[in-house]
Amino acid sequence: MAANASRKGGISVETQHIFPIIKKWLYSDKDIFLREIVSNASDAVTKLKRLASLGHTELAEGEDFRITVSIDRDARTITVSDNGIGMTEDELSRYICSIALSGALEFVEKYEDGDKSGGIIGHFGLGFYSSFMVSDRVELHTRSYTGADAVHWSCDEGGEYEISASDKESRGTSVIMHISEDESEYLEPSRIKTILDKYCAFMPVPIYFEGEDEGESKIVNDTVPLWARNPSDITKEEYNEFYHKLFMDADDPLFYIHINADYPLNFKGVLYFPRIRNEAQSLEGEIKLFYNHVFVADNIKEVLPDYLLMLRGALDCPELPLNVSRSYLQDNAYVKKISQYIVKKVADKLNSLALNDRENYEKLYEDIRIFLEYACLRERKFYDRAKDSLLLRLTDGTSCTFTEYLDSAKDKHEGVIYYANDTALQSQYISMMSAENVKVALFDLMIDTQYMSAIEQYRGDVKFVRVDSGVASVVKSEGEKNEIPENVVALFRKIAKDEKLTVCAEALKNADVPALLSVSEESRRFEDMMKMYAAPGADMPAFPLDYTLTLNPTSELYAKLIALAGDGEVAENSKAYTYASFIYQLARLSQKKLTADELSELLSDGYKLLKMI
Image (cartoon, rainbow, N blue to C red; front, side, top):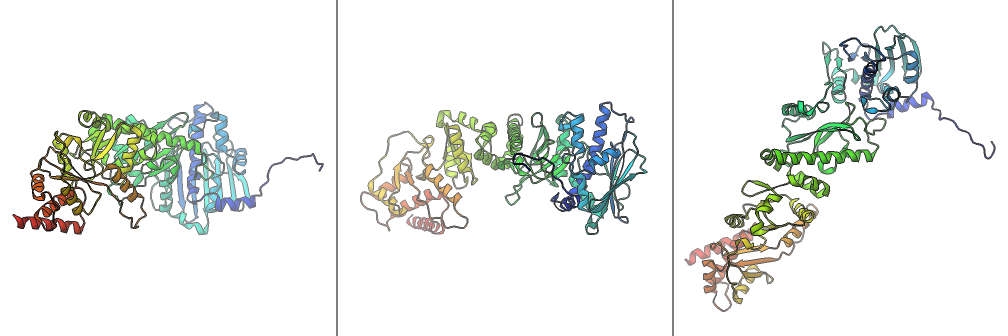
């Protein structure tokens, strides 16, 4: 060949080489063979209906279209029959004898102007050959709607085929699969029924299963799944029933979202927020993915962002970019658009519930709160979309939005949201706030520290402060500042074993409270973050917290302590020391859970005081 010459040609593949690959590697799951053969039958019916609508053929009024799947264990065969478009001998030679030439794709190009949304399932032209995954011989009897002679095709697992005349009288196609000896499990009616229930439950053509142990043939699919119906025609009970059918969950879902996306995405579906009963229950949801009503997979997580993976539901995406086996997604850009659309629909649903069904929304909010907080942390856009539906749970059992809380706080503590994380431990602080008509939010999840920081960053007009993070101005009494004697400051530092303890005096409206022990909000949050990111089981060194002891000059107990302490150093065995120690222990009791030694010290001081009476 000359130096500048070139030659072009097509790659040639020997049948005896490609068939073993198809038989072993075309699909990751052998069960899929039945899905593919039944899908072809469904396509045959869909094509015929389309040709009739275009005026290319006439159909009898009220014609009963159907697909029949039958088993003959004696003959070791599975037969899938349809009364669809059928094939002529030329079409059979073109589409069946040529691997990877898709008759469905040519039909779409010819009659649908390339529009793939008309319900045609086939795409790659390989589905028919999945039958050889479980068969050592496959037969096909077909008669075209055109009235051409019926044709019989037979092929062994080596790829050698024979075409002859068929005695088939009715229009349509029958595929007869002679099951291999080592695939006998597929001759069990229960096995075939399970596969049909999984992959073909919502195909658009009625499927009748004739299992020899089943008696009469029974329809096994719902030709109009819930997502294909008009939402206004569906009741809540029907949505719940569909959920139970899909996921075998006895509990009703919290709520549902019906999706009907048109151009440019073109997909439909129904999504559910499941009810999570306890923390031990799996938080991982399940999205069943369909391709023109044909089940594809239930483990493709790319269609949802990670923070919505608890969702359950079904999505039918006729333009989903799948690989040959229809098991893996190929176009990340398209899938990302689907994911973004779902996020928008979820946020819209939350906002609608919060606005139009507030009472019910507040009841279910506790079940979804952790998911919404995590979603807000993961993506700012989700927060921006759903911010009006985010609620604050209050310690009095009610709920409110952030805006509602901040509006009610303008006069007393503008821009500050007070919260508690342990209503029992912080009950004294909550009572003091409640006495001043100050609402206290409840944040008792591990994620709450990060969530509050994110909200502060997103909004810029709010600060979260725990009720025991200092003495709030709303509980202080107006009056002159009181100076604490140096010996009393030294006394409390000695009792606390903390020379850096800040001791101050603030007049409180509640004269019954002698002292409050507090930790700064920033210090506590830093400690919480360290705990969150510590390795499981690791001994984390104690984080040095900055404590402040606030004494209340309006309390009679404070006045008695000053009188007992006098001017000099207070001895450890004195009444003043025991008195001050008990006050400190009570203040610490409302700040944190006591250790065994601290509880013992509190009891000891109490007993001493009783003896002094």
